[in-house]
Length: 309
Image (cartoon, rainbow, N blue to C red; front, side):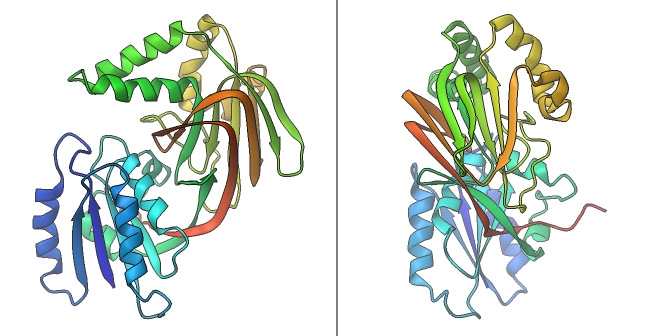
């Protein structure tokens, strides 16, 4: 097996490459399998590089296997997944060296920070979402929080503190007009929502946004996506509901929140709007008037370390 480590040097508080290089040298000095470290250089570089590497290898050979490691945050995992989905004999691991690794929160009993444990771990068939032409490992969100994330990334270029940039983005978007007019139907043509939404989430896993539990009932290998609309509400109602939303109460205590929330499970969904929507796919921002969402059942072999003893 080839172990291929994709490292984002700008993810997290410090560059993980020096520490990772030393650890890998020790781990592999008595192993027969090989490893390669690739440091990303620009946006979308991980996707392009992984596709090139996989195309060069004979992955139709059952003896040929490659494990791709994403060393960074959710954005790095997004780029890696978009390079490897569709290839056989490939497994995918995430090393939490970025500022945010929300997908891993859905596996609380596993220690992804133990490098050797991840290298030795087994992989398991796991779902992903296809959002238009992009692969989503974790969560796609649309609306207020996506707009906030978009502004936060812009402010981070001018502000030293990520927290300060996020707080400023929250405040600015709270002052803007709230709500997007959207029409949403499932694969059978059933209308799930037709009105103004504050935000939408399409979830493969439980958490996003640094710890918001948007889909507490999500299962990453069941062939279904978790869909939620938070309807347009007043600013005061929004501020009153946000703490419960962060804890997942909008789903876990649905009867209390159903006045403001629509929740469903589906395999395919379509969202249509007359105006461009701000879409965040695993933290990466896109814009479109139409969103097609589909579950790709068991599309990746995700590496999950043993339970913490």
